[in-house]
Amino acid sequence: MILQSNPKAAYLSHRAEIDAAIARVLESGWYILGQEVAAFEREFAEYIGVAHAIGVASGTDALVLSLKACGVGPGDLVFTVAHTAVATVTAIDLCGAAPVFVDIDPQTYNMDPQRLEEAIAGAVTSGLGLARAVIPVHLYGAAAPIDTIAQIARAYGLRLIEDCAQSTGSEFADTKTGAWGDLGAFSFYPTKNLGALGDGGMVTTNDDELAERVRLLREYGWKERYVSALPGTNSRLDEIQAAILRAKLPFLDSANAQRRHIADLYDSLLVTSGLTLPKRSEIAPSVFHQYVVQTEGRDSLREYLKQAGVGALIHYPVPVHRQPAYEAFGRGASLPHTERAAREVLSLPIYPELDEESVRETASQILSWQRSHSS
Ligand SMILES: *Cc1c(COP(=O)(O)O)cnc(C)c1O
Image (tube, protein in one colour):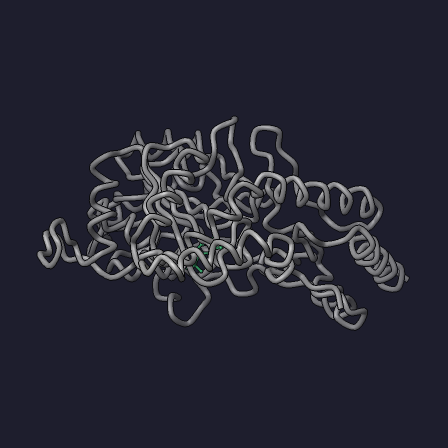
């Protein structure tokens, strides 16, 4: 069986460092918000190239606390995409705000800035709420056109929060994702490019005031212990996860390079496959959280691969505006590229430790599916 992702392999390849990091925390006697979190926050901020990084409990919480730090709440509108992990929208809804869905660019699967501008103009005249923020998602590891999106956000006075859950380490024009917006939200879910062995997340920002607010919000709004200055929550990154992430951060760039190497190999093996392969961009090189192909025969290809022992997944099968929990927000939205992507995309196996043999086997199964499919 060829797995689609494999967090255990990442653990095993850095086992000594990770085991030592866990033991260090266990023996320290300090398990919540201690030296490991503080050190990881410094190291991560330096890696991303921002002034502040604040460890939180998950990527979802990183988005929620970012929105709350910007003062987003009931009656507010937040522009985002429906072709994303549901968590992006969960976070907006948890703040009491309403998502406004913007269609994607069919080649990159990321937010289309032109559609964003139209959606903002439409919202301003609709009177449905106050346009407050935009959350572009850097999907599959490649940055959205964040320069243009940032310009639009500035022009309309919107806060810009980057969803970097799938893009840790990726850059747009030589600046890391998470350093472009007012805030960046990261996830350390085990299968992400920088994965913990449990849940974790991070908020990045260059703004001292926003950083201070996120810091308060993650622990009951405490400025002073036991006295809440703001209505906050419990969303702390724990010491064990921070220590594990510190052990893994030095290997992130080489792990991402390995993902790129696998993507290059897929590209060369699948040239004749007839599938639409990931679009490459020099200004926004992907860190390949996913290697996503597109075909009208997606369901048949996925079944064929499954029979052949190759794990492939769909990110994502039901766009958020079609999911029962959130469809009320999507009424009237026209998202043809989002809907087509949901029908046709397939994520092939990719993770840094995936061996070349498995990549070749996956590609060869795809080519034999193509032959049987076209005859
Ligand atoms: C994983 C993910 C999240 C949520 O992160 P969690 O740590 O699982 O809460 C948010 N947005 C995107 C795009 C993701 O892929």
